[in-house]
Length: 271
Image (cartoon, rainbow, N blue to C red):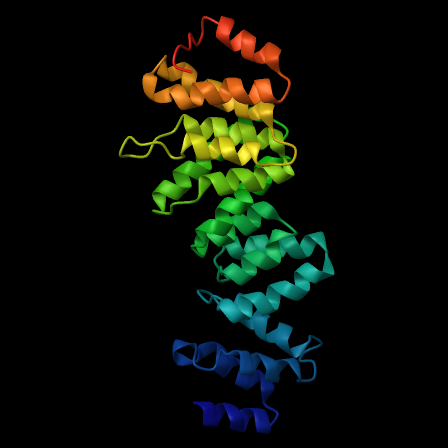
């Protein structure tokens, strides 16, 4: 088949060569090298030759551009910055005319986070799916919608048997949006693994907020108190009881420490 292809190319029967490429068994001719050859050809029917080839595939029922072809088509469209170009890519993805891949997701990420998330998900790149979720949550103004995204992250990770380092994710989010990081942490401490164990270690989670510069005392206090309130006054939580009081005393928030001790919500006795 490669010999036939070369004969057609050498005879300048480019359109026939492209049709042969599109129909080649197991996509044998649909390679980076072939695309490079098409790029160097003169226009066909008034179109750049490579675009003519892509249109041939896009207009063939049941045909899907492979990974390399999808990226080669999408990148110049995205670089042009035209809204209708992005609309075309969205349409082609919905019709399964493009193949989702990590590289295609990378190309889309700076242009359309939601579409990039969709591509990463289809390409099974969980760490980048979650990174997109976090980036979307950092921009979300509505608290309920942000919390819904955090619940979606946990659900997605469980569904694809992926175990994120949640403390690292919270730390990354904290550098961009400290308030949303605190919201994510609060969602995490109220979720459990299927085994009944917590998704995060509460001590490590507190470290994530306290090791920043400056330490985020307010969020750490909020998270620790939320965790301890539902557990009641337990001896095994002595270290956490001590810590929530200590960080406030050390950072000149004695009034907060006294308020915690005076509150009937906690009744700490093991600090």
